[in-house]
Length: 259
Image (cartoon, rainbow, N blue to C red; front, side, top):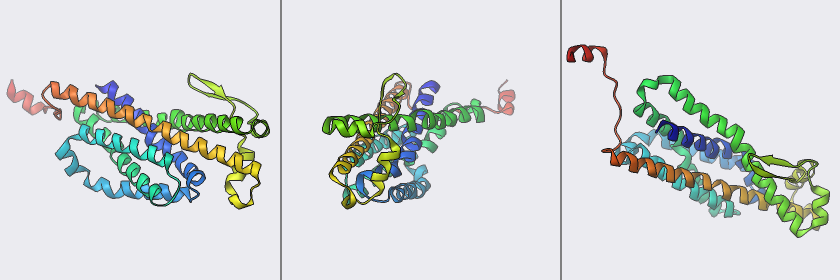
């Protein structure tokens, strides 16, 4: 169970921290809005809702809450990948923000309740798994997907333009094949300029970058889907053993009196 929780929290880091590090830039490109405002909005949702975590956990159990959060995060990320502007972006961001709200604290709560003897060492290991996953998997993984689909889109639509804007080196991610993305020094300035100031070739490059950003969010939505399956399996596991319960450590005095 501890190993399963460790892996699930690594995915939490991927979804929450890894996505947050990219989402401001992605939504600026995708929706034509200040992406940092979206990040501030979802963070505000998290700040407000975490005050109500206790009553929710007591009603549906910690694992039930984590399962619901995974489903909401999956829907929110996929929705963001399909949204362009206005109310759709607002609703998708709200769904994603609510979904990621309870991941981190609830996971630490589950670990502390089920493995109290592990103390700060176990909690530290769980937290480290999330942080390392965000840095070594989340950020590079989302960037890889964006590079892959942006380059494929431009290569299909305008092969000559792709040769002009291709990055000097190919990059890979884990066991996935290397891909040659677009050169950021040339593509990023196009995203920062108003669309009306771009020529047809530059608009084609911009469209490819936006397409890659959309696909990166859609593929990232698979991670909370896997998490939802993992939490559901844990719910079924504990149900087969009589239900989820907090593990208590008996004090020395209680042990002595029992003897």
